[in-house]
Amino acid sequence: MKRASRGTDDLDALVTAVTSTSKYRPISPDLIRRVGARELAVRSNFKTAVKATKNKLHQVGGAYFEAKLDYVAMLTRLREASTSPDNFRQMCLNLMRLHASTRERLPILDEFYTITLTDLPDIRVVRDLACGLNPLARAWMPFGDAVEYVAYDIYADMMVFVSEFMAIMGMNGRAQVGDLLSRPPTEPADLILLLKTLPVLEQVEKGAAARLLDVIDGRYLLITFPARSLGGRSKGMVQNYDAQFRAWTKKRGWQIQRYEFATELAYFVET
Image (cartoon, rainbow, N blue to C red; front, side, top):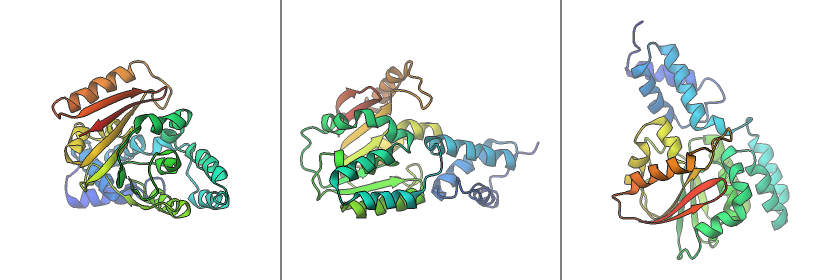
């Protein structure tokens, strides 16, 4: 069988094929092109490259959703709850259950940010990379209202939702579509959140995690890893991720504090 061409025409056609379905249409075109180019280079034909690209995109994003999110309905529920701080917090909890990554953090949410970010000096800018629905946990974070919170993710529709959420909550922030592999943000920040993000990047491209750590500019980093898989398996995961993180940071001269929670392994880093 003839190997697929690496030409621009083939890549454009692959992106068109992938985004023809609603599941993949909101994903950052930069990421689709990056994944697609790699698959075209190694697959035997165009059709298998398209299928492999979709499978990879599902692994890094789609697998975290049990169903398509109704962002319009979610915003309606948030607006209705916004008249009461307690009701609003409860609604945020309810909606965070709709994304696997934030749902896993809910049992430890009351202590997670309090412990990992305890005694954090005054900060002005927080960047939440590959944020998912984590901005909905803003009320649990020990930051003042003046802090600028910038959220990044590969899903355009989700970033529209997060932007609207910020407006409802009165947050000083913005949401941006971004692919951390192709165009990682290099603007300085006081704190960068990389919550269960690095393993996902490694799924897409070997060595991507270390490259991202090379270019991001944060005075402090909060980096976490899952303590178990989406399927609930946990054997050896904490030990493997700990060894991986130590290898990535061995020569960086960072000050690191390690925290182990029931569902998440966390490192607070001072660069």
